[in-house]
Length: 428
Image (cartoon, rainbow, N blue to C red):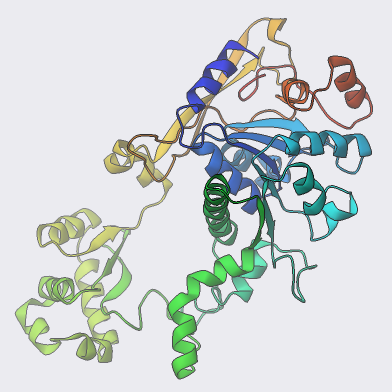
């Protein structure tokens, strides 16, 4: 193990999940991101991915940037689970792990002889997170589960978008991210129960159900009134005013009058006491949504974004600028909170496949969102971005699976694993 990697390992020991070993055998977002969250807070994450190409996240979007942050703090150990030798090495890794995260279709690992029953018999304390689109059971369990599908099927897309427009899918991996948060929470809960005298267990994490969980009050209202909660743009059926508005300089702001006091402050800013007296409560404001919205749009449209924000801040009314990434990177609050962190990726000789003694090195700065939430005594951290494919294979297979260098070389020759000898990511 290199000095740099050893330093990173010692740093991880300060995290609240120090001593927890996670095997991440999932792909794309939901499962791998759950493992990322655990790694952020000190867990040692061994990333098992296919020797040819690795996790599809490495190619996602054509630039590999998704892998940079989802693969952060992880040790890349390629294994071909279609091969018996690969499955044996995988089982050896899981036998020493606390958590396994996987995202294969239900029954796949069982067909390979490395399903829950087999793995838990060998490792009774194992917590196994099984992340799929539709869950391990039910009529849809065999369907491929991409986030876009469940964002549609959860009711989210139907209720999102302009009233006269189509159902709208989010432009980010929202469903996968929500499922990852649920999965990480469940894994920590399961570990707590295990260590309090319980046993290991498996977690059936459905991306569809995680996304559906966001629709909480919509579910309750439909049952009570039959309201399907059709999309309503940026306005709200429960709060007026609420919308986004374009400023005189072509920027945008968003506001919300969710409480009585704030709603009155907003009305007073754009229309004085007369407007407040005309719409004294939420019921009257809901009945006059269009008129109130037009008054605010006119007022905002006559001023620059800076003027609008300053006025609302002076009156303690709830309003915020609509940011793009350029705004976020320049904002002092995001900077003060370490919302964006920059980490360094080192490559020997500028070649990801070069050896450490090949001479020279190049580094690249990689920006990514920081660790949340913030713990006062054991905060999370980012040591390095997603590593090269196979960057840790030799060390992990030697130390955790008990394989000799010769046996590892044989697996490399057979295409069962891949080894990168350079220092990409965290190095070995």
